Length: 244
Image (cartoon, rainbow, N blue to C red; front, side):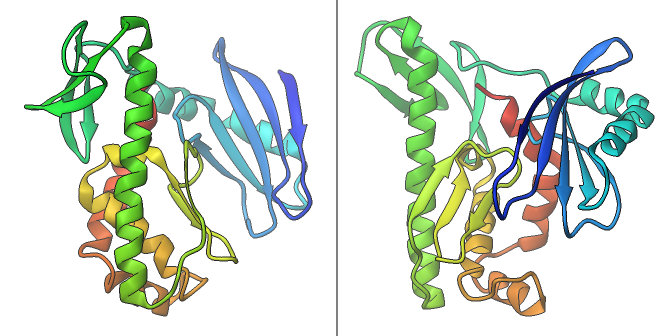
């Protein structure tokens, strides 16, 4: 086992990063201290490539490492069940708002990236294809999210602050105490109802900062099917990190 780094910032959860050998396989491991944790929790990382062990604040980091080792068989089984990575390349099908579109490279034709009959058509130098698809998806995500934030904040009567779109791994969205909203761009690949729910969830926090009954009642007024969207994210959300 090799300690890779330690990151600590005031007011944030402390964590250590390790490279752990499990059954002859090198597995990235993060042991994270959370003051709200009551017990040790072992789970796969958001991208499905490694493991995150959350421990109570007073628990030693080494105890988190030992917990990962005790669950080695479970971890390997879960890692083996993660879908393979799919690059942004010609012929690869990627979901856009939940519907598969095949990436199609054309050396000539309409410039840029555009949707056409179930395909995401990309022109220009083939070496730039992956980068162009990545930028197009992020731009589309920002557009879809911004439109929904505007509509839901107007309905709620609460203004949002800055909106950022990033490749976050641990959460799909967040709302700061100043009303700034952040979202994972990969939500643009989820079904539209799922994207809508995540936006509603974070906008709901503009009115209710906790996850109590009033919060969930507020979210229910901003989107149609909360439970189905939450279930979809639990079952299939990790797969969105396997693209690109």
